[in-house]
Amino acid sequence: MIEIKNLTKSFGKNLIWKDVSFQINDGETIAIIGRSGSGKSVLLKHINALLCPDSGNVIIDGSDINALDYVSQRKLRQKFGILFQGSALFDSINTFENIAFPLRFFTDKSEEEIRDNVMEALKLVNLENAHDKETSELSGGMRKRVGLARAIILQPKYIMYDEPTSGLDPQTSEEINELIIRMADQFDVTSIVVTHDMHSVLSIADKVAFLDEQKLSWHGTINELKDSEQQSLKSFVTASEYQINSKKR
Amino acid sequence: MNAFGELGKYTSLLYQALRSSTEFSTYRKSFSHEMVKIGYDSVPIIMLTGFFTGSVMTIQSAYQLDSAFIPVSTIGAIVSESILIELAAVISSLVLAGKVGARLATELGTMRVTEQIDALESMGFNSISFLVVPRVFAGVLMFPVLYIVACITGIGGGILAGIATGAVPVSDFLAGARMYFAPYTLIFGFVKMFVFGFIITSISCYKGYYASGGAEGVGNSTTSATVLSCMIVLLADFLLAALLL
Image (tube, rainbow over all chains, first blue to last red; front, side, top):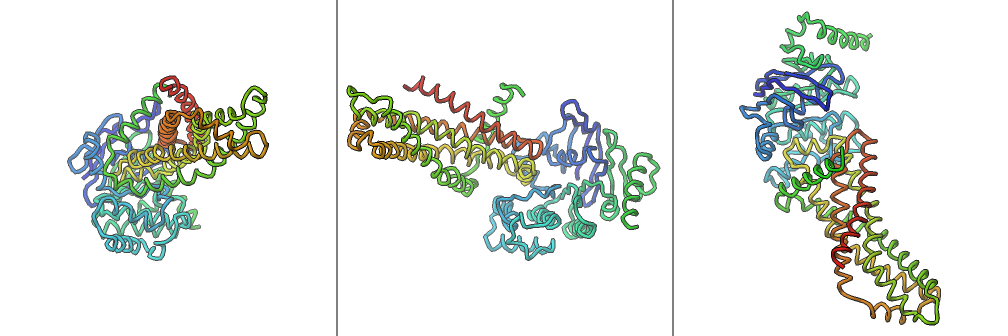
């Protein structure tokens, strides 16, 4: 379980958000939504201590991640797999080596076992034939899927997705959404998805946290979201729905 | 950030890199890769730099010492001593600040802005130790090797220029070089390259690691890594000369 308590963050004099508090239960899929620049990705990076808050706590399975020493913090980070916005694949090595990378350093698996694990992960993301491709040869959607294969290779308890569908065509976005659902079901992981794509939110999320006006403006289940009368949330959802409907027309 | 702030951040990076260093096997692949990139790949440009430095030194010395009262072997002594004690180390290092330093800063800067460093951290790696340690150690080991290459090609270039222009016969050049040779000069050159290798690789890694702001940020970090490395190399050259000679 992840508990976020009274988190406040500024960059210099620029306040990103203050007193953000919510809880993510095991097995849930939560979507963190908000306008561009509302600090969604910044919040995501606080959850596994890639960034430190000005004040407040992030409690992961009972441990305050920012209060841990560096070695314990690194161990706790291994409970997380992250799919970064730009995929963050290592461009000096190929697809196979990108996925094998954590296995080589953090497990004692043999070369054969590593190969089996990597091919299995690639099969899960429907990219069995891309194992020998250089990362520069991959399309945007393929990069996301390879990033996801790398994120799950150590079988993390939590998977964080930073804008998983941004910059992708609708069909590929749909495939990524299906993968997120499949990962949550198949591995019983807790998923935290940062996005401003409401279509994606409605497809995958159990709960939603809405960042607006430098605070956590709204937090609730997907059904509560549909019935919510909160003005800023309604505007955000309505704008997104309008976009979706416009695309359909 | 002011100069003291930068110095503090740089020192902190080096401290974290060394404090968190794990077993050598973690770095083996990256270390050998960097040895090739920094050392082997720099041999052609160091040979070229050394050769022309020696050649020009010989021609200019011959021009300036054109006197019946000065033996031609003096040219060999001046050229070889200058190369061993100063030029092979400093000119090579300035060239390497451009070649090696710029590459390291760009590589790490790109990794920073494309979140590859965040990806390493999120997997549980100590990214500073993982990225900086093998690069700095490879630099510290390979710079003295490149110094030998620069010395050999520099003196070779001097000899060839002496033959080509007819200013100094080989035998006179070598006699002059042997007459004033002191082994300490060579040791001093190695010490310099060891220090310059550390300065260039560590400053470039520091600038790249903390790059921010996309392509422009990477460009800025590369420029400042190269300029700062050159300036600190010149300052260190002065300090080493004042302290060790």
